[in-house]
Image 1 (cartoon, rainbow, N blue to C red):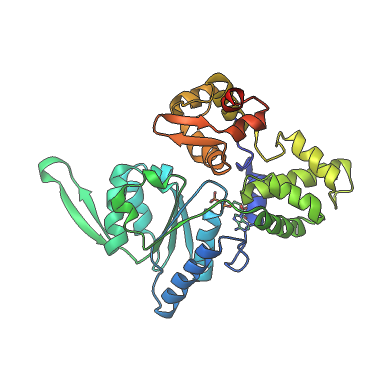
Image 2: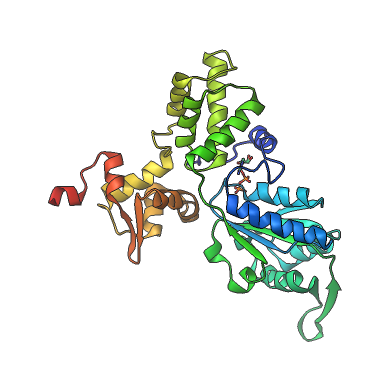
Length: 335
Ligand code: ADP
C-alpha cells in the first residue's frame, strides 16, 4: 500500500522539486520555525561562519528537505544530500565527510537510520570537525585523526524518539514541524496551482486543503490529480468543485482526507480489535504494512485529529473514529 503523499516516479519527483519554495519568505506556515532559522542563518552570515547544526523532525511531506535546501540557498553554500539508510558503515560517512568543501551544508534524511558505528563518528565530526579513521586490524590497529572542513549538518527524522541523546544534543537547533492548518495548505495550493497553470477557485481550493492530511506534499499531489482530471474531462486550465470531488474520490481520498491505509488501520482497530488496546506490531500485521510506516506516517495524523489514542497497553480507538466509520461506539451503546 502506498501513501498518497509518497513520490511515485521520476516525473512526479521532478514536479515536486519544481514546486519547492526557494526561500524562507516563500515557505508557507511554520512561522515560529522560520523565525528561528532566520536568526540562526543571519548570525552565521554576520560572523561569516557555517550555521549551527540543525535537526528537523516531523512526519513525511511537511517540508524538511525543502528547509534544508533553503538553508543552503539562503546561506549561499553548496548542498550535499544523503540519507541514513545510505550510510551503513562508518567508512561511508568518512568518505562523505572528508569530501565536503568548507561551509557546505550536508543534509542527512532519516538520520535515525544510520549505522551505529557511523553515528559515533558523526558525534566527533559535528563537535570538532574531526574524525578518527581506523586502519589495520587487531593489535596493530591504529586510529589516524583527520581534520574536516567545517560544515553545517541538517538532519531530518520522522522519529526523533529513535535518535540517541548524544546525537540529538549535538544539534545547535532542533525544530519539530507540525501539521499545517487548512488555511496554510490553501496558500500552498494557490502557489502551486499558479505554477502548474490551473485555476482553482477558493471553494474547491479549500476542499483540497481540507483533504490533504495537514501535509503540503499531499496538497500538491492532490492538486496534480485534480489537474489531470481537468485535462482529461475539462479544459485542463481550470478545476471546479465537481472536478475536485471526482478526482479525489477516484483516488480514494475521503471527506476528511484519510486514504485507504488510514482507513484500513482505523477499521482494524475498531472492528477487528474492538477498539483496542492493541499493540503496534499486531495492528501492522493486520493491515499488512510495516510498523515503521504505521508509526511515522499513519498514526501521527490519526492521533492529531483525535481518532486514535496511545496508552501504555497499546492503541485505542476514540469515539470520533467510530463516528467516522459509522460504527456504534461502545460508549454510545452503554450510554
Ligand atoms: P519532507 O522532507 O519533510 O518529507 P519535503 O520538503 O520534501 O518534505 O516537501 C514535500 C513537498 O511539499 C515539496 O514539494 C514542497 O514543495 C512542499 N512543501 C513542503 N512544505 C512546504 C511549505 N511550507 N510551503 C510550500 N510548499 C511546501
